[in-house]
Image 1 (cartoon, one colour):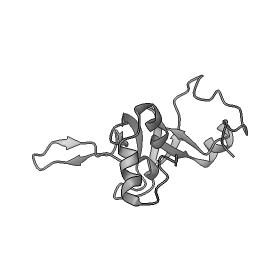
Image 2: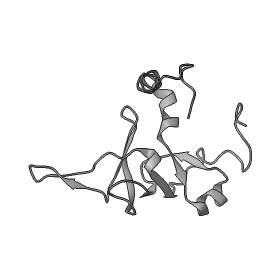
Image 3: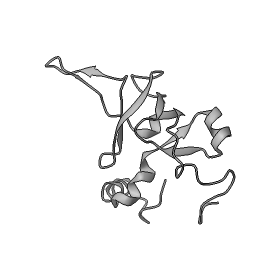
Image 4: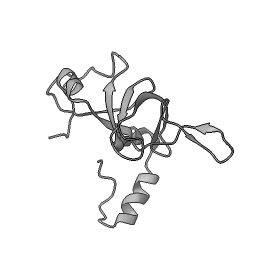
Length: 126
């Protein structure tokens, strides 16, 4: 988690997340990687993108897999295509899922996404 405030108070921690700049919020959308992908790519987590295949690890949809159809940076949620529920009106909707409850099993190939070499950390990481 990124350190956004010096305060230890949970309310101020939540407020800092809600008021974070959009260019910094992409780090909050990161999900952990499957063990096979971890070995292949060399990192523990990646930012979720549309087209990635994910597996739900927590909650009422545990064990289900599907492709990411939408990433909401403002709410900090991810929408998966195979996971749906019915509204009272009978309409099917995709419920939002927090990225920490997901594991990325397959990724969309992108040259910029995997530019970092195995075992090298960004500036400031330890």
